[in-house]
Image (cartoon, rainbow over all chains, first blue to last red; front, side):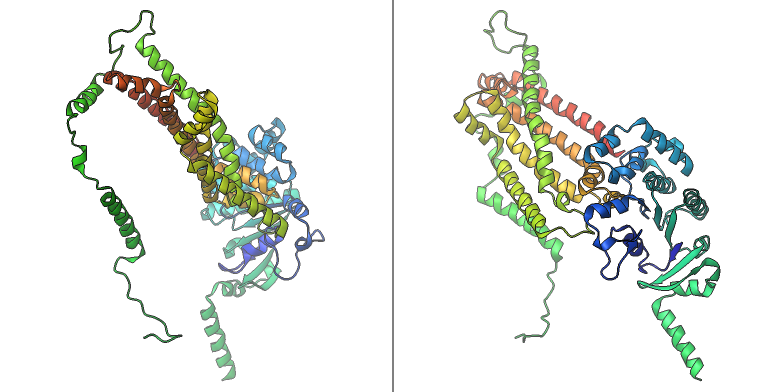
Length: 232
Length: 292
């Protein structure tokens, strides 16, 4: 599914609520029947370790190698020393898995490259590979196509949806591109922290989508003129 | 008179806040100059013009052999002596840094705010917050104490307490350097970008892992460059400790100076300069590996 809405609509906050990196000020967030707000810290981290998150700014460590950034996806499941060893001296099995994932996201040749030497689109693929390395049951992606051009954005949509389908992952993506949102089966429209609509993509009218992005005063004047014309 | 509740109109200072800061710095400098009665005329040699001239003239002709007569038979060649003193200077500095660097790193972590930041999504208990604040405060106080006394003063203290031995010299350098490294490391860690940390936190990593693999690597290039700079300073300090009788460059430099062997003095000074250049080049190459 895709969250769509203008800047400040609450898309990122909602995604962060879903993996427990932000706690709800009211209401409850249930993941596999567990209330994230009521979980102890360790249990919350366990939930996070099973939810892949692709950040808008990639949130990679730029001066580490691609392989190290991908292996970092398993930090949550490893103890302090095992994690440090896997980052500094990764096992052959880890490297093989990282290579397979990089092959799947289309950049196997970047395995030992420094991450900050990669383009924005390539770094987004590394972030995706890191999330997949977690063996997640759900994949959350916050504006994953914001830093790439249109053609690459379409490629990435196909990649993310394809990977999610292959692995049977729940996929939640936040977007502000309406055309890209149409490529997801379900769309949730958000505005000012509230759900405006939640419907299958085919049932969402173009006007509903575009109305989400109008400025508040524009929308109010439109509504008041509609009221006036109804009264007259 | 301005009544209570009315907004007071202030006439803006013509320079603004930044201008006032610069003005304050310049004023502080001028006050210091006037307080000390500094004048460029003080640098004009009075009576010892010949000594100053001889000293600086010797800079062009550093000694490659003993300058004075009366060198005993079988004495080591002069350049070998310089090399030996240089190596000893490096050894003292290295031993001191081998203590200062790891301890400074640990204290820097404990004194930083990021080291205690935990997980923003979960609220730490009052006890753990109090404990964190206490450890951080105690570490910061310890760091201030370590670096507030200069290495030469530590050297004098240890010399009096334990006599002339290598451990005293190493500790005299290591203590203030640990404090300085810890302070600067803690600031570098606190100023490191946090986006990578957020990425790792989302994978379920524990706060210590987030620090080790998300914050530390981002601060590492600057910390490495600074550690090298401190190593260079430690070499200088180690050389200066020679003035107290330790067999480093300063010991021989002092002897040559007292014997008015200025060309030998310059040879020792150039040895220090070469050491600094080698370290600088090493540090630059290592930093490029991290940053470029």
